[in-house]
Length: 209
Ligand SMILES: [Zn+2]
Image (tube, rainbow, N blue to C red; front, side, top):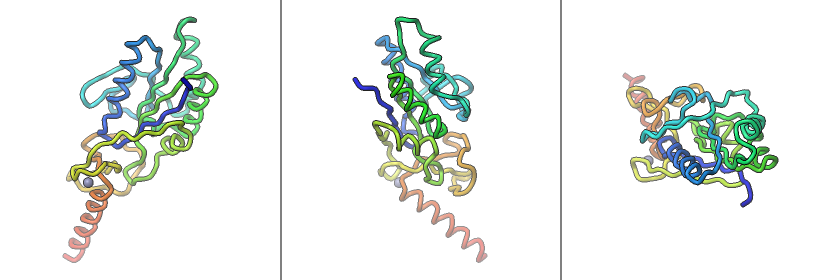
């Protein structure tokens, strides 16, 4: 089987992490050597751990923002595994936080080391713009798949709306703000625009008052 760089993208709460963890489990059941990693920007689950919403947990390697992922995988492959067992898969969670350079390094892992890489992550931020890591993955990946989830209205979710504690949509701020259900709500584009329009209308009314 030819080695590939895969990108699975979806909104928050689309069970991406669960998929990664079950994939990792299945590989290990079949004695396939894997390396699992995650960018250190995702601090929700604590250091060195990946956790899914349904409670599955496993250890992982944390990726620092300036880490060379080609060297990291090469090192793991030669130092951590025996001469007779070679790494076959690298699984990356929260891949939107990778730098563009790190995605290039993962492509090199596939092409030079002959190890397949599967990345899971968000496509866009709370303003519906691409994250740098996701942009580079969309440019370089051999296979791109969407992990779909449904909005409350039944349409497909494609927006990670940022919300305040009153449930009002937030449309300005830093691209990266780590949080869960308290801070984000996956929505379809239509529902997202409706929330933004409602917020603007409410503001006009309060200005007139
Ligand atoms: Zn909707």
